[in-house]
Amino acid sequence: MSTRKIIPTFARLLLIPLMASFFFTPLAFAHGEKAQQAGLRMRTINWIDLDISTDSVAVNGIVKVNGTFIPSEHWPRHMDSIEETAFLNIGVPGPAFVRLHSKVNGTTMIRSTSFELGKIYHYEVTLKARSPGRYHMHPLINVRGTGPLIGPGLWVEVTGDQADFENTVKTLTGEVINLETYGLKTALWFHAFWIVMGLIWIGYWFRNARKEPVIMNRFNAIERLGSENADSLITQKDMIFGGVSITAVLVIVAVGYFVANHFYPQSIPLQTGWVKVKPIDNPSDKLIDIEVLEANYRIPGRSFSLRFNITNNTDKALIIGELTTANIRFINSDYKQVALKDSHDLVAQDGLRLDTDLILPGQTTTVMLHAEDALWETQRLTSLIYDPDSLFAGVLFMYDEDGNRWLKEVSGLIIPTFT
Image 1 (cartoon, rainbow, N blue to C red):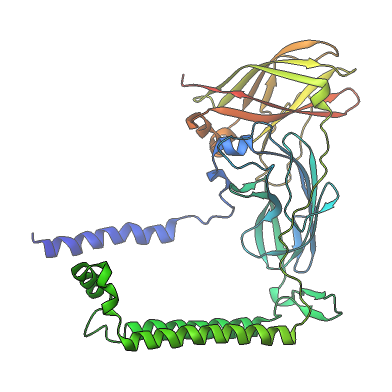
Image 2 (cartoon, rainbow, N blue to C red):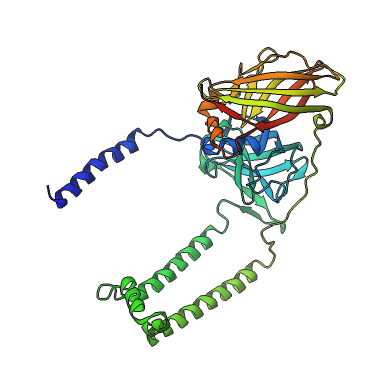
């Protein structure tokens, strides 16, 4: 068979699976946060107490997102730290909501900030529903140089018609404007104008492309003449056109600036400031001490085991009720039950087993902990064994007899077991 026949036949065979992938590939309904490395999810931010005020809201309705996060004291050294520059945000697919207000520990979050490792931060975000649909909503923190670090998510459904959405604000000068359409015509006109200008520029240089192809011919000419003689390819007509073009662009930009300044004399530049947020100390840091002795992950059984010494310097006995890591909650069902907030809530109801019931006050106790559930596999946490440093981190939730909660981060080297 000739090469001319082989290539079309191969192309047709390749087209069949490609077309099938369009029809049989399932839709992606969430953000793909599972794609983030397991070590990164475990050792960056510990997200706890996520609460979204409603799971169904109409267009123009209000949704409030509240919760707590603790930047890990075992932050990966190869990543830029949250102690430098960070910004609290909410992650949803597309501009489905408008953020009206946000706070961290009572400080308004319209600017960037930084967060101290091991400290406690409470956040509150108020959103307004904009586009109908079903959205997996996450709190997230953007860290400069690192990117978005995504917290746990819950589903929120928005009903109604987007045409009914209202997004009006009153400016500092007293004018009421609609942010959905304000300045839209001007922006479209400017985009169209500069596209035309760009096409004129490209059209000039490719005007004789049929007779004399531009790119390769000029490249070959430069190779032949040498880079020191490349200027000889530019004609006087080309220089005139280039000079006229750059002059026109500068004049248009200057005129646009003065016209905008005339019609809008009062303006505030985009804010790029930085604000300090006062952290909340974790009382467990002074009263509870944990020393990791051994940590293993058994791959066939999807089981994480941890042996550690815990010293209880409080005046009450403690019981371990939960381990949270990488947004997954492993619950000690002998102590408490957790109501699922939706069908995709990452909670392992019977996922935590312990060989010790109580940690008595003033004593050091050796505890053997097992966290077992299929979520290790489905959330792709088993990939932590392939990390170059093979470290884990998570937060232990302990409770005293009065129901008070104590939080303590635990971390250490993890050894995989393949049998």
